[in-house]
Image (tube, rainbow, N blue to C red; front, side):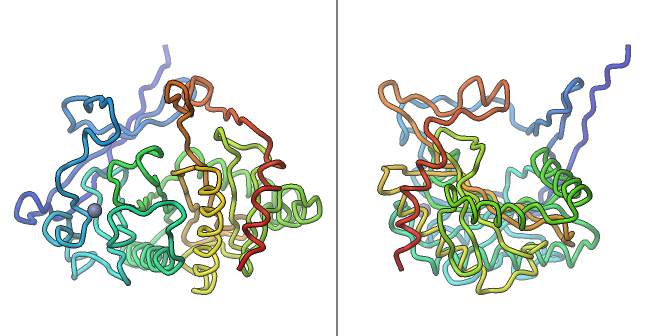
Length: 341
Ligand SMILES: [Zn+2]
């Protein structure tokens, strides 16, 4: 018998606000399915499964740790060796460690002082500050630790997309090992360049520009493409940062263009009564010429009647997307939002 139960433990430290800001370590088990290599992250320190709730607001805590009056006392701090001030700030955005870390370096970025922000209420400036301070955090870790880091900036926007808090926040994950999807993207990009002597994302932009059926628009240098093979009920949208092999090396104007495009995309979602989405920006440091930094946004839905979840057996058991209408149709609707100022 040659079945191997492969498991690795990664440890993360932070100053705990619920224990006088004493340093705490928490571990996450990274387990691989013995047959397929599919990865699970297991919080072994949790003793019970979370409670099921009947309504969305039943489990909301009475106070929000991310609101301005609580953030100093109720959120964690980085160990001084990494960030002497404890937290990073820019505008209204604040970065601190996740007390339920998914990996060695996992930070939370509270985007704004506003507790709840509707999908059409975003100002680009708030997103610029959150993305810019995210970049500063990633630079800080890379500088302190050296070597190669695979990282992502992630957003569960509203509880429908998996957020455990109403208050809008990003999560940054840095790891020595890519996640399954990051590994697929990096490896496929490398193979594409070997085979085609070109960068996949550069060729994709050109191909979609020529076909002009999934090219939603452009904010400055950044194209917004509707995914050819989507993964959610509603086709997802990809924003590519041309030539940026590493997000930490991108220009500030590109962060502004990314934020502006997100506001336009969110305005489109608002017009379709979508209230939440998942976003991930994939990158690595140092960058490689075969990989360009890009973000993917997947809207999340519940469908009436029965409040149907948009994750069914095809996604959770087969890891394949089910999409309810074509990317080309979504693109027709999206284009006018990118033509407005
Ligand atoms: Zn709040």
